Length: 308
Image (tube, rainbow, N blue to C red; front, side, top):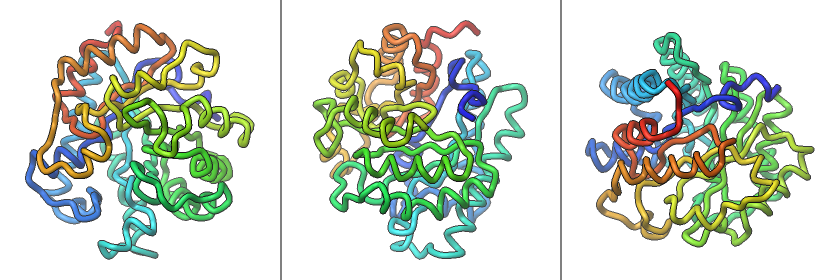
């Protein structure tokens, strides 16, 4: 199942930070930090399509592939209820987001692409207070993942996960529906997960509980200088395939309270990820998270050691 994922063997770009760009740079409010309601208007859909198409254009330029994540990071029951989405309406949102990503895939032509069903944490990924058991996480995330799978997602990406048990539940559902799954943990400024554990502990815990079911692991929503504390030149790091970075050096708490966007330095960020690619030759997935926009993606892509 995992062998079918092209990003396991060649460089792929991934962009998960468009919410901050939409809010701070485009001046559009996103209640609940949800981008998917924009699909309900022609202008909103046009804006969101431009992110996919811009990502694909950069990948075409450098000879990389693209992971086309659905706009469903917050499209789970708890996080959508506050903005009026639930039940059948929420299921419909998840399905329409897969169809929207598939349209971008059709436009991509020869650029290698994967339509990824994006899953986020049940609560605040920066400060997970309502910790679930693996069984509770499996039950909670089951409906969304099954809906994404039925709609045609080619894999599941779980992003900004703060502890192993939630990841285990997500992996179990993905395996049950027959989809490859990637787990992306987030880390604090000290390189540790929000719940205090190390990346190694999280990866090894999930692998033990699932017989190594995840296709691979990532780190996201951290600046390269913060994630540096997570990396190790050890055997378990072979399970980690990439990094989707924040532009800002701010902590998660500072980002939560920010009133202005810290977009860092795109060229510096690109150089930092390129250095990581040279350090870990098995890393194949790189991209931008909070504070990044398509400038950052281009700066990252153009500095990666990719032979176009």
